[in-house]
Length: 409
Image (cartoon, rainbow, N blue to C red):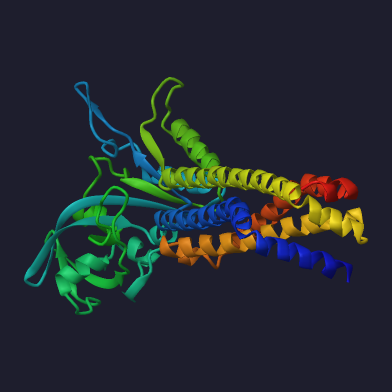
């Protein structure tokens, strides 16, 4: 009963003074809406970045030959025959935490199928390449170790080159010619798109590395064991540790002095995206902090509005105390008013924030746990700040002298 007798006057006061109630709600409403909206949009951005990282290969390192220097001019990365198959084997044996190590050759050439032809990229690989960079098949079978061991003339086609050469027809079992050498198509890979460098990943043909060296691409820069690069898939997230381990191992194998530059490049494909992801997360945290400041400002506004309310309602407070209301009942009434303001403002703020997120394309993030946590934290913080803001006005109201309150107009 005591709660009802306190709650009813609090609701009546909020309903009678609509303008004052609305002004008090604004700060809480905007603060909660801003927090919810920022977290939802930040979560959406984070999800997109995480998808990009997974697509690139969040746990993939590339070891590429370094540039060559001729007459004082440096060529591009990948032109020096400094990385070899024995290097790849040493990395696989001596560096811990690797799932797959795949050596590869690469070259551009012309491919012919019937009366169709296309300039494309030919990659000489081992089956480990598709463990290091998983790439599902739409039809056919993958490369196997026997293909590499026997230098088989078989080929896997990427999605785009398969469409160019065969249209909608299944190319599995068909014969193509690469530099006039016949190859049997054993499978077609799923559509992949473009790499960060703008290369068309769907315009590639994969053949065994031994076949590429003997039949198509020849020795890389005249070196019998040199390769175009090594792809490493790391088992854990210690990319820096693995990268440093590979670098130290190759410098030792290549007998480089302390002051000699590396003749190879170790590249983390997703490093830029991870840095961007961390930056996006920090930006979200900073914006949430800024939005939380508006809750504090809203709390100060509620305190001011309630202090004005105490001054205007002195006779009401005096009358209630004169007919038997205790000081704690008066204090409870103002705290309940503050709590109602917090709940009402938070509810409106959550609705505004979620609607804004839907309009701005953040719908997929609404069902994520971080969105629910953001709503819970925003409402809890708003309620706590509002109740703390109502403490001083409620105590001031409770300490009024009934006689003085009734005699003052």
